Image (cartoon, rainbow, N blue to C red; front, side, top):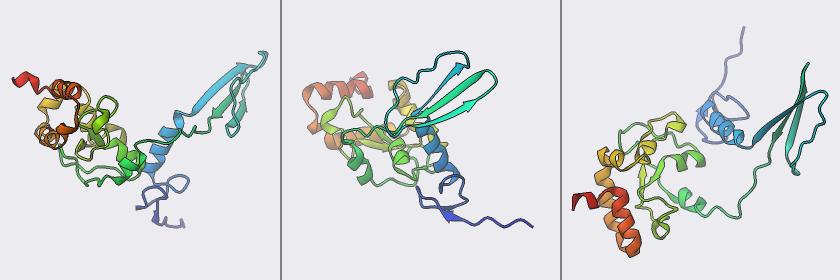
Length: 200
């Protein structure tokens, strides 16, 4: 007789779930694995080759497996902490709605990574520094990476895609609330980015 599995709160999203791996639900576990994948490097040599690992830093985890032909080293890099994430507090302060503003599908923003994925800047943060952290410079839409709708991705694909979306009108309304903060150069770029100058 098998023991029935119990629902437990996930350590990342705190939603009662069947725990999948390391205290996380299946969804959060997949997100963590995706983030870790970027930090993992696999190197392999034939047995008769001289082996040199190169850059290995303190805190890196090294797993060695030996097959008939190859010795494989998997190096899991210790995440490098950036000197202060300038947008961390901004994303944590946002009130994320439950639904995508484009299609009304549920947003899967259960942790900090998810919160960032569903927050689509109306004007890109790197280009428009003066309004990068303005709360109205955001549309909340699903990201395909999270297994939801992919309207955040669609928004980022170009002017024609942006103008064909339901949230385009919302974006123009929100722009009015902060465009006075844009420099003259940024205002020209913003109109071009959103295709506003096409209407003139």
